[in-house]
Amino acid sequence: LSADTSRFRKCLTLFQLVVQGVAHMLGSGIFIVTPAIIQSTAGPATCISYLVAGLAAAFSVLCYSDLASRYSCTGSAYVYTYFSIGEFAAAVIGFFLIGEMIIQAPVLALGISENMDTFLFNGTVGNWQNEYFPDWFLHTNIIALVVIAIYMIINMVGIKSVSYINIAVAGVSLVSLGTFCLVAIVHGSIDNMSKVVDPATGKTGFAPFGITGIIQGAGTAFFAFVGLESVVTLAEESVNPKRDLPRATLLSFSLVLLLYVVTAFSMAYFIPWYEVNGTTGLIGSLVEKDMTIAQWIVTVGLIFTVFSCGLCTVTTISRIVYSISEDGLLFPFLSRIHPTTQVPVWNILVCSVFGALTSIIYDMNILLHMISGGTLMVFVITAVAVMILSYDLSDERSPSSERTPLTTTSPSYYSNTKFLFTISMLLFIGTAIMLTAVLAFAKQNASIIAFEVVLACVLLSSLAFVKWRMPLNAGEEDLTFRCPGKPFAPGACILINLFLFFNLAISALVQLAVYGCIGLVIYFGYGIFFSKITLAKQKQIDESAKEIVEPR
Image 1: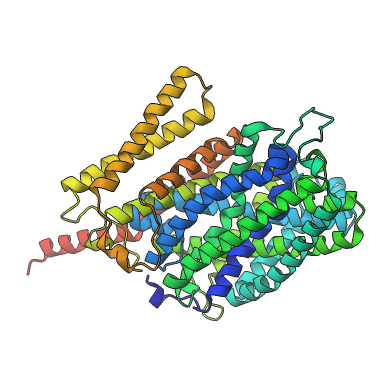
Image 2 (image 1 turned 135 degrees about the vertical axis):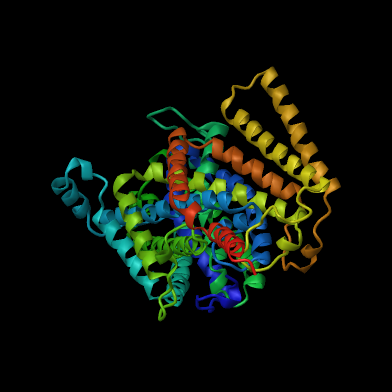
């Protein structure tokens, strides 16, 4: 399906796309993730964690912008993988995306619920739930379920309603964050950044959890950059996607990264890091200082900002599910577009229900790590897609918006050049996985360091071969944006994201693997039989058989 024949309403401008990206990334990171990282992972060095995560994400932003200038189909990393690697890999990454987004919506709804119950209802709702709900229903949160239902209803009305709400909320968010940062700088102390000592653990200093804490904090901070998906998934609803999507991705990322670093620094400057409430965060710190007016301003900003982020999450996941369903890998009713609102209504309903169920089953801290793990894997695949599409385009792979996956039937497929490129890519990816896993898990000594140096040499050699042997495709000149420094920038993206992935909590990696297995079950149980590729092959077989039975 090309963008020109899309059934979606093409109405989003560059400004609206930037606001969509900012709204999605801002709420998830600043109000919910930042306090949790400060309290239990990185301490005052959380601002450094965001810079590290931002560095890794910057390479991903370049890759996303490159791919967005090539293709104007909804579906984001799923579509890019479909074009560059094939159906199976696209199905895997698509289900990672679905799991990631289904987790994010309840996390945001739970964040809203905690703050509303604490600061607006004085804990009444939480106490009522604890008294009347059985133990096995412990994670059920009435406010969170209501918020998810509101996400669903607004998205069903149409994309323009989501866009208008995001624009209004963006102004409220900036006022709220500006108020908090101003209050924090005026009433905080530089001693909170390095001299305070946690009475419970004795940890102190700017990085009380050490370099490990900063790296783990950076891995969790990737939750904040999930919003990159929300910009590129709206390709078919953008007025000028090939021009506006790369610009919107770069602009929204730059604005949000600046706000993350400034707010993380301000919070650690305001109160001792061990006193930060990992749930109530910014508002809780103002309550401790008895600053009522600032507390209410930030409370209103938090609720609206996080709500807007959740709204964008449901929008994003519905477009990804739509794209997967369009290719036959999910049930066809999920790609039905309502004739009036021009959005996939049944799709939005199903995604919202699964989000509500997730909010009941899981604890928030586990959900945060699972989201980050999914995001990191998606970023890795996106970088791989850029390398494949830049150096291995045949006529069938020229940049277009047609939804045709790569096949291995072109005459040049088994050519020497392509074979060498494939070997180089496999060598690079395999070595990257080994190196990052060793760095993350192995105890460093002389022999391990020597092994790491050997792996690093192999990595650089494989990239150097691609750079020397594989000229860029001629079609690159027609792109509105090209990732600079190929293949080294995408290679750095792969390395950094793999390293952060292996530094996540083991429990998060295991549960993420469970989501991947569920996706594989769906693919092999349904998608592989009803995909467009399978049906097209079956049609060719039937036509060939018919010609044999009924010769002309």
